[in-house]
Structures are given as structure tokens and as C-alpha cells.
Image (cartoon, rainbow, N blue to C red; front, top):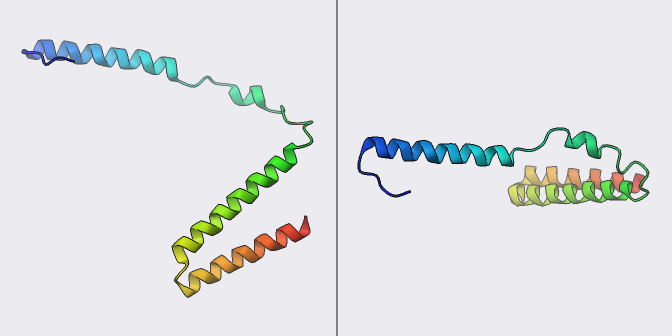
Length: 95
């Protein structure tokens, strides 16, 4: 946007830019109802349970890494890390 010399010109330029942004925003807004469209698509997929399990495993590992990074040097924090790791091992043994 070039620098305008008067307030009126500057205001007109700002109004034009706002209008362009609003038009662009309308084009980018997400469509409603997408969840309903995909709900149940994995219902009969035999590998979906494995996908969920692997996702949970990844999140658990990331949580342990974050705890180790945050509390690694603190004795009480390491107790939390060990407890979480122990709980994770128990869950894996049950499977």
C-alpha cells in the first residue's frame, strides 16, 4: 500500500485493505459438518485399533520425554517419571 498524503486517502486505503481481508477470510473459513461426514468411516477397518494403540503409545512416550526433560535432575520429579513409566509397562503387559 503506497503512502497516501491525506487522511482521507489513507482511510480509503485502509478500508479497501480491510474489505480485501474480509473477503479472503470468508473463503478460508472451515465448512461445518465435516465431522459428521467422516464419522464411522473406520468402523469396519481391522487396522484402526492398531492405529489408535500406536498413537497412544507415541503420546505416552512424548509425555515421558517431556517429564524427563522437566524434572530429570530433581529427585521428586524422577519419582514421577518412574511412576509413569511403570504404569505404562503395566498397561502393555495387560495387552
